[in-house]
Structure formats: structure tokens, C-alpha cells
Image (cartoon, rainbow, N blue to C red; front, side, top):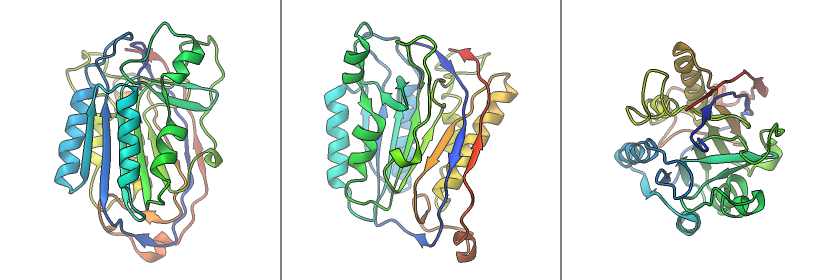
Amino acid sequence: MRLFGAICGICSTIMVLFGATVTVAQSNRALIIGNGAYESVPPLVTSQPDARALKRSLVAMGFETTLLVDADWRQMASAIDQTASETQSGDLVVVFYSGHGWEDKGTSYILPVDARAGASLRDFRRGSLDVTRDVLEPLTAKNPLAVFAIFDMCRDNPFVANATHRDPLLSDLPTNVVVLHSAEAGACAYDALPDEKPGDDHTVFFRQFLPELKVGVPLQRLARQVRLATIEAASAAGIDQKPVVFSTTVVDVCFAGPCKGISKATNSKVPKASNAAGGGQVSR
């Protein structure tokens, strides 16, 4: 995300992969949210174009897609509930959010456009949506094949100076989710490279993310590729941004269709959890 016009990047990655079999989704559906026209916090000019570009790509791949632009709390909550109610067991669900966000004590929040900047921490929390409780848990309630959740947003805390930040434990997350954050807890994500103005192009993260969306690629591999591509692109521009990935999937799920170029022997391997961390700097 990106909160109060700041964008920075530090990230760690925790990937736990369990691959016993290759499974194909019954259907593919997506909820896309691009919030930019905020009422009391600085606007974001890249969120809407990124959301619309993703919708075009997913529709072309056969996804049943819902797009929200500049949504308030009720609209976001209603769309999540509607997507959850339409989801069936065995579906692949993609949820993408681009906009302001923040993190507090291991909990990440996404920000509706009607959130009040001058509110207290308690009021601000009430006016936000909890990524795990309000997004991931409803979408996994009907046992979909997997939920692939992408959050291009900051995860710092504007209310607490020198706050202690942490990423969620895998045990905090529902089963069968792959979560890709564009920044780790306590950090943000760049809207533009140093020689660009926000809006000249997609966000630094999104311009690496969109080209990696290819039918048949395992979700965990796709997320890792986006992470590495973002790190490389940011580093080449002299900035530091390292996305973070979490996975609780128990089968190999591939994006938008059958897995390509993966043998059952490969899928039966269980890699060890990995950890990586890096420093960061403020921008945007």
C-alpha cells in the first residue's frame, strides 16, 4: 500500500509450500479494488489504472471479475461478502487491492476512501478493513481451492512513532491462501521510480506483477517471481522494495488453469520454509 503519500520498501519472505498433487479450479473469480480518490488522506493516481489494467487481463483469461473503484467501507465490505457468497468449493479466487493501507501489531488493514485521517487509532481501525478477518476469512469460508490475495499498499503505522511491526504468523492465516504484499510490515511501496512522477506508469510493484500472470504457473512460484522482479527493478533504480509472500496452501494450485511443465514428482516435494529480509528507505 501507500499511506499518507509515503512509499518505502523493506521486506522479508516466508514461504511454506506443500505440494502433494496438482489440482485445477472449478471456476476462476476475482475481486479487484482500486482506491485513489480519498476524502481526507492524500489521493493516489496509480490505483485506478492498475485495477482497470488487471481487470482487462483477468477477463481475457476467463475470470468472473468484479471491479470496485474509489470504494467506501460499506461498498468494500459488501463486495467481499458478495464474492464470498458466490464462491464455491474448488474455486480459485483472486483478490487484488491497490490503495492506502497500514499495519498495527501484526494486523494489516486496507483503507476505504471515506476513512478519516484525523481519527484516533481506535476510530481509524474501525474505519479500515482487517486483511485477515474481513477479507481472507470470508473468502475462504466455503473452502475454495485457493485464495490468491495481492495487496499493493503501505504497511506502516502513522499513529505510533517507532512502532514495533511484524508480519502475521502462518497460524494466523486461513488455510489455502497465498498472500502477496508489495511491502513488509512497517514499510511501504513505491508509486514511481525516482525519475518519474506518480501516474506516469503503474506502481513499481504492479509493473512487475502484471506480466507474471500467466495461465498454468503455480501460485507460489508466481508470487516468488513477482517478489524477485520487484526487488531487481527497485534495486536497479537505486531504491529498496522487497515484497513479502505467505502461503498456507496444501496442494499445488496453478493460476487460471492446469499446471504447465510440472511433473507429479516435482509437486510431491515439500520445500523448507525460507526467510529473507532487507533494509529500506522512504520515498513517495
